[in-house]
Length: 141
Image (cartoon, rainbow, N blue to C red; front, side, top):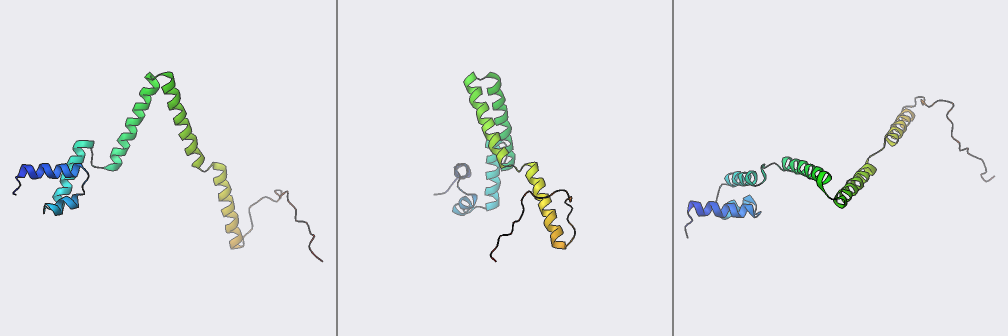
């Protein structure tokens, strides 16, 4: 069976739109893979406005922000309350994954102390700062 150009284009577009890899489509129909990839890119631009995944994800985030603004502005009280709780919950979860400034400063002090010990140099800790813990003898005699 001979394919017309229109039938081939429609079939290739349908396969690419359904997620069939461009390499498979090119091999099955004995087409140049570069041309099939270009067609896949055109289809993605037509469907999503871009062929770049990062750009598309960024646009989705902006759309979600706009949707959130609309819910907060015009939603019912229960919709707004649910939305605010979700946002605050996610914010707290992401906040807990961040390293606090005090922990970061503590790490920096520890690294500096270890570096000075490694190099044999004096520590920069003030003499008045002493530990509350005291080593007590009591070993076997």
